[in-house]
Image 1 (cartoon, helix red, strand yellow):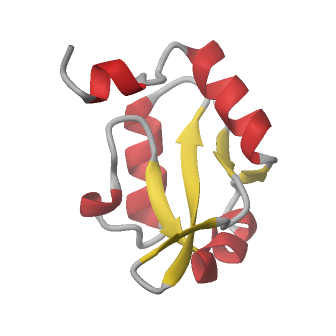
Image 2: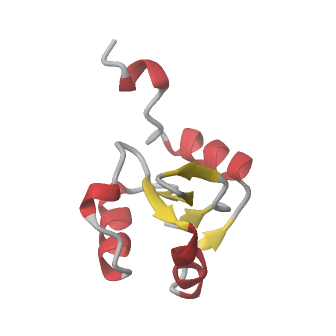
Length: 90
């Protein structure tokens, strides 16, 4: 099991945001997020949205830094990816 984090590139609420995912297990992702101070409200079905200032701390805590493309590729390969269609409830 590997926890992955990408670069903070997505603007919202006056900040830049990154994504935190697991390549195998949502329970492990939740435990990692909790242990590193990421609140449950940051979870969005298959990933956590994390602020730019948390990325270095997450990497220091064991998350593997990858590109956004690699993060999505590995999330899809894990079977944990929630598609846009699934997000819309179709």
